[in-house]
Image (cartoon, rainbow over all chains, first blue to last red; front, top):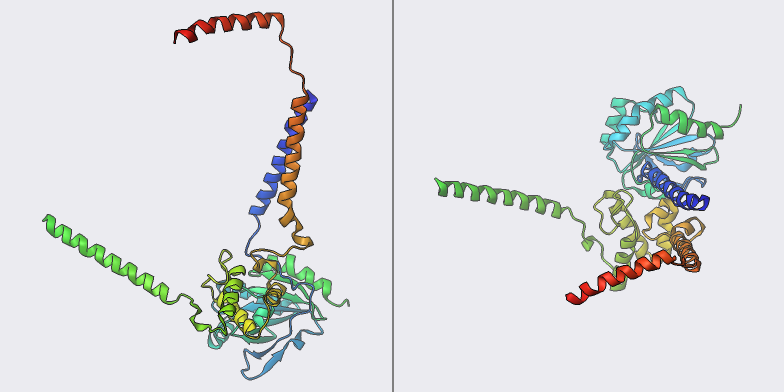
Length: 180
Length: 170
């Protein structure tokens, strides 16, 4: 009798485990593709400044302190959605925010910054996706957390809001900030 | 009355067909073609088609780089084209993209420890299932048939005797 009970329970248990696994799969967002760049040095670039045409900015600006590199474009609605939070982060925290303007047009990008505020310490301009490919960018907004040694520590795909900042990004920033 | 109605109807469907054709032509005009890429040899063009068919567009995830209209796909096609022109091999190009975008750009992921489950998991499951099935079948075979009791064999003979004449009547 006990044998037949277990012989029914084992397949049922296996079925439930599989169902739970598949159900968990439904909650994953297929747009979030893990980046192979996390843990590796940030790809080098030399791009024109968005705000000062003619000036080149190189990836050396990422050395020496923790930075957020925020990939954005004026045509991207989610970027507009997160913009207010970026302005707040720039004001309230001491992390360096680098704007990575991606596949955009300069006048439209500058207009967005003048209308909604410019949270970026520096903005690089990549209209032709030169550096974007090296960074594995496939959609805006994306945000990379880079430590003081220039190593990518985290990649956020999708907009940042207060909750994402507090729970997902700030802990990484704290972890890699020099103590003291 | 009815002919008027018919003419009106015909005109209306003609207008609709025209509008539809317009839409089709407009979307067709934006379609990507290979014309902007010129190849050194037919073999290079084949390699290009082969590669872009194997690589996934990350924006429209169910489309290959060859088939996608997404802007990013066009950037990556140009990148692949540029690398082919430089004489890079298929493997070098694939490694370049995987290093930046991850295994996800490949429709057929490479075989390595992190993809072992993906590649071999189904065969392991089939093996385990087959083994369980064989074991269950063997266990069933080993069980002795229960002996018929005296009462059962009497009833069996009665039933057989009752069934026979009917069969012959047919």
